[in-house]
Image (tube, rainbow over all chains, first blue to last red; front, side, top):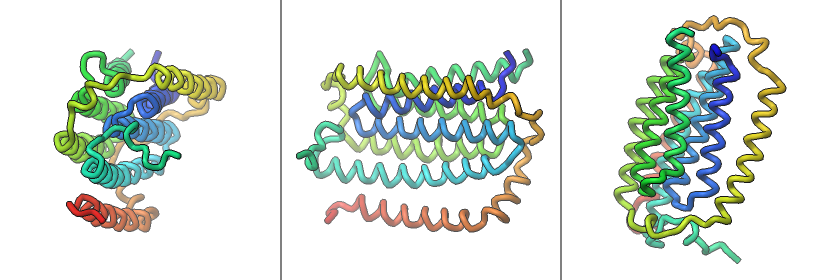
Length: 101
Length: 169
């Protein structure tokens, strides 16, 4: 079959679900963060595919902004993880129980 | 089937395979392996961008994600303790509930995709991947968001420097 819009969207959906599964099942903060990046990338793929098949460049501009904001977000998140590791000596989601009742 | 079609299936399979290996690698639970497979995922996704004639975005994807972001990830992984992850067991309760919920969401997405058939009304693609119209759009219609994003990057930079100081108050 010649790949059309649906094919790209199916790849995007599957990749998004993989990222979601990673965030839910993995407990290492860094791997959870990488799964978040996977989800962002899946959204980017869907936007670029729509932009291509509708002949509209606005989707690509949005992807450009998403990539920029994601880079800033990764920097801040990793700095938070490092600060957390200095305080608690752990980068594991199950050890962060301070706010648990 | 022409060469781009074959390349689409190749890159899509590579993206999904490496995506699986990012979150669940049967051979190693080391975060460095996950990071390396995330790099591969991002590079094959840049290949998909090229197939979609988004050449500028493919270059940005490789430069920003595979270059800057992943180097940052690897630096932080090296900064932290890696032995910790190996000892811990995966909780089967979390795995089962995660699989059920993600399966439900995936089935909803795919059902919508199959019933809506978004590709039916799609015209034959007209954009030829030239970056000039993209740049024109970015500096005319989207010039305000562009400037706001530059301020956001500055704020993020200052915030990261503050957060990673030794004596965080």
